[in-house]
Image 1 (spheres, helix red, strand yellow):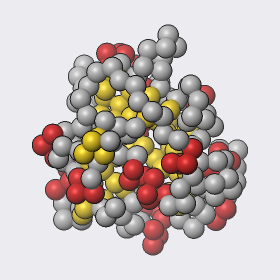
Image 2 (tube, one colour):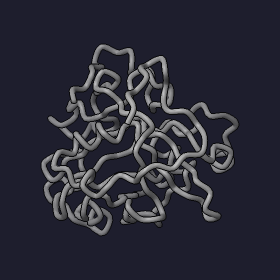
Image 3 (cartoon, helix red, strand yellow):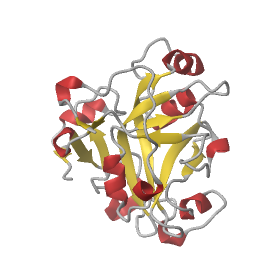
Length: 230
């Protein structure tokens, strides 16, 4: 893949595209942080019922490393009807409902019975943008998919996609137009996990530095931000 153009170049251009789906081996990597980092710049695709492609470039992720990670739904080996998805083979979609109003989309990683997952926190809209606006009742691209709940509404993601195979036809992730270099990736603490004790400050939230579509762009200028190493 081509090199990322740099902070000024933004994310990949918009328009129709179709690239190779990420293979199973990408998702079964033993290091969830590696997967979370390498997902940046990839294209999340959720086709509409009529087959029209609706997609966005992944610009922000969070890694969760159960069962040790207190911020993970699978902390301590917890297994419920909801979390059972996390114990599936890497490359499975994990979709859950929070706060009685939002869905969140995660990518299961590693082998079966190892509950690792990556939350997709923000996208840059690429295809089907008019459809995204209608779904969200939103007039512009700004803030259209800059959050895990927003992007699920925009792409039509709900619990029906839980346990979907990311190598299938319902939802998948493709290679991005360019590789995102380590110099363009920032890291910091995950959001909304104040209950996680010593795991709160782990720099496991990763995002494309300076990208306007991340969920918390204000944090990009704070001193806690640092470039993630490859």
